[in-house]
Image (cartoon, rainbow, N blue to C red):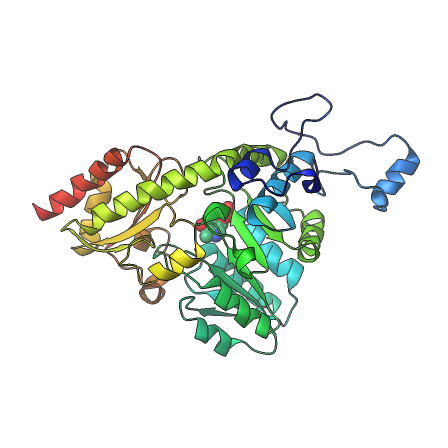
Amino acid sequence: MNKESEPTSWGSATQAIRSGFAPGSETEHSPPIYMNSSFVYTSAAQAAARFDQSEPGNIYSRFTNPTVQAFERRLATLEGGQRCIATASGMSAILTCVMALLKTGDHVLVGRNSFGSTINMFRNFLLPFGIQVDFLDPVDVASWGAACRTNTRMLLVETPSNPLMELADIAALAEVAHAHNALLVVDNCFATPVLQQPLKLGADVVVHSATKYIDGQGRALGGAFIANAELADKAHGFVRNAGPCMSPFNAWVFLKSLETLPLRMQAHCANALQLAEFLQAHAAVERVYYPGLASHPQHALAKAQMQGFGGMVSFEVRGGQAAAWQVVDATRMLSITGNLGDTRSTITHPATTTHARIGPEARAVAGVGDSLLRVSVGLEDIEDIRSDLARGLDALLA
Ligand SMILES: *Cc1c(COP(=O)(O)O)cnc(C)c1O
């Protein structure tokens, strides 16, 4: 089904369930998996027409695949974008931004609190190819304008960020980017389109790690690039030639997952707020980082640009790393893992895991202290999540 034939009046829950797919010749009710690498033609003339693109249609699954396209259409609709290009992982979506939209000599501004692999990719791999980069505090919008040069072509931020839930003002950064003839790219992984639509706030590109909330059940790796048709065509040009495309099987997993994304995000938000309030009131907790709390320094911005505050909660315990590890080790249900956005609650000590390799100075700049813990609040009963954390926290007071 093409998007044009879908009612534009559909709400987002309906879009998540019905958008992007209609039954094919077998009248299947639920999307099938087109697990094939190539497609056949009825004649030499049709083959030629497909290859010179005078006739639309599939050629090879690195270029297009019906299951992948169904996922792309549905996610584009949810983000309010014209077109989505699915990728093999979140990192390959970010790489696609660079390869499709930049060239040697261009300058990029990246949030200094960005995902570790994003920072490493720019520092270790793109810098040697002549992509210049500066890392900035996304909370301080004025510093982004001041750092723009004549060759600045892209600004890249995550909001909310990992693990301190700092927000970037998307509309304000879009203005900065456009005043300098640059593109604003927003990594919308933590919020998902259910809670935040950056394109509607002025961003030019949204990137996703579908591995997180879009799957939401810890099964598959994937990513996405969403933008207007012109930028998405460039992204598709890179993906179809260079090959960081999404597997049809993974696309099918994500397509089905999108159907429950609005419901799941509401439940993640409700559990996270209750956990944040519990932690804030606990005597062993020094500070809680959650955009839904009035105590969050950017609570007003969160209310203005998000439709919910997400499922990630970080907090500092009293007593440094030893106390933080004690709380981790006292859990019996929470999974000790770096993954996030799962139905199962997970707990991480960022300083010794996800942020260990950046070193103590960079951790200090990022505000990742030894007593910080990050919880990806899952969909178990909130009472079970709370009591699993209370066990270790209460012991710290004993
Ligand atoms: C996980 C993550 C990525 C990378 O995604 P992969 O699917 O693991 O490649 C990028 N950005 C953010 C914010 C993430 O959490």
